[in-house]
Length: 430
Ligand SMILES: Nc1nc2c(c(=O)[nH]1)N[C@H]1C(S)=C(S)[C@@H](COP(=O)(O)O)O[C@H]1N2
Ligand SMILES: [Mo]
Image (cartoon, rainbow, N blue to C red; front, side):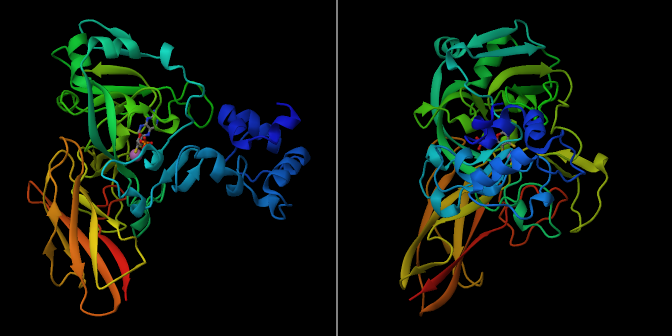
């Protein structure tokens, strides 16, 4: 790479060819155990990009991208998201920016495990359906639109690790707080229709999903993530192979030009940059399907307890949960205010939403809308009045159609999945 290129965007060099970028900047290939000494040219370039010298540059790990350079470039087209990691890009949405019934694309969270493909061409993109099918299919996006019914629905996607940041003892991984959840309007064809067209053979038990993103190491033989789901789930009506998000082509960070949308299950099943779905006669074993990834212990465990890998089971549905999206945490309000938000529960519906403004002593039932369609979160609102000025917390708790209610305290697990504790919002009343 030419020296003058470096001043443009260090992230794209690391994205395109991480090993080469590391060599250019640090003079050797990445080794997570060792600190790297920036080469003189690399140091000069980084200093120019952050706008001053970097006194502690000797302590920067190899492959390190200063946060000051990272935040702006990597979230083009997103608005107000909090960047948790820039390589891979992980960004969540503050709850008060999730107030819309339908989440705008600019506020849909981003959870990448690898490096997205660049300069994708929707016109030449294809999706292959193979494995145990009667007729393997390779379909363009135009084929999908022509051969199958095109449907639009609002669908909730939540990362299995949403809320991980509140675990104690802490769980490793992105420290998501509240905002790895969204409900955008997706347009596409039903996965079920496409699988039926290929002919699902009787021995099929599981799907395997493949996307076009690259592994962080740059090794083309490695996949960042490839998950799947039981065939019975795959054949449900709500799951889409989507090519539009909120009436426009998908955002590049959300899987353009084609992705799966699997409402109610960990969003890791919703493969982005989708290129292939394989039908298998055994449970899938791709990256992030095995070990402890997207798995929880098969029994309740004490906080901090060590659990053997063989005692972990694959997460299926996401649990009952709600968010307060208005007012924002820390807001000043009058003696009476509307409180509102959303609630959802895997592939169930929400029956009841209650709010408390006296630390859980009493609860009032909120007005709760039906989902706009199956797979969408439900909107709720309630007028809350306060007896006098001071500090209050508004708590929200949802109960689903199976009678399951959100807990007050975290049900701890080693990897920090499925945190569905009540959302609490602090308010100053004057
Ligand atoms: N190809 C691919 N698909 C992927 C991922 C990924 O890293 N690569 N991340 C998964 C995870 S863990 C989540 S939570 C969702 C996030 O979707 P979003 O980034 O559109 O919000 O995408 C899923 N699909
Ligand atoms: Mo995720």
